[in-house]
Length: 289
Image 1 (cartoon, rainbow, N blue to C red):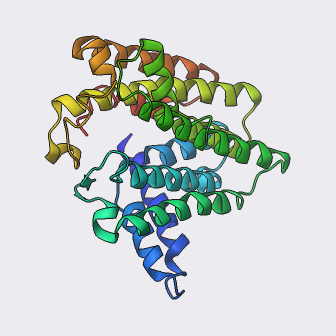
Image 2: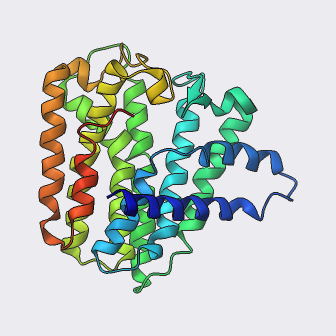
């Protein structure tokens, strides 16, 4: 698993660096500095890896999915920049170093996030698909997952819930959008780039749903049991939020991580050669970062 993950990650790192590499002589150089500060700060690159792997699972060259993979990562990065702002989570550290607004100021951090979101669609539109009609489907999927019906909508629901305890379904609705939506976008867009059938695209979405839940529940657990050194950001910051740990407790959360991961794995039955993506999903069970 490690070799393929490293290959995908290295490829997308270079792809992201090259995308802005030719633009630094423009007058808005400070904007590019702020964008790249967060975009090139490392991280798991889970979403690009998933996009490239589902492209491969559907019979395509994983590199065909690079515009989509990079676009999803750019949208994810913009969301982190904005989440860290004083008006949102007011975090000082992200991935082991000061958050974007601490380095570049709030105004530039907001603009860096705005530009990453918009540029993501510019980049996604350059994908070369076997069937041009699939482009509208892909861009529509990306927009839905990122916008009011997806990630942004989930963030709004989260903000509106801070003064009360939520029901189980409300917590699931929030996290399905906040975290799961972009994982869904990555898997589905990868399948589209690979020329996947309707059955394969549906399976990619089901896998993403299970993986997204497992990933978020584990993330909530790590906010309780992890350390700032391991996480690269503050921990314990979600103690007063409506997290899965607050809802279920650590022991039940561990069981749910296993259950949702298995749901994701079961959805892969329509594909061949799934050992790598199965191992990737299982790695969420015991991750510490």
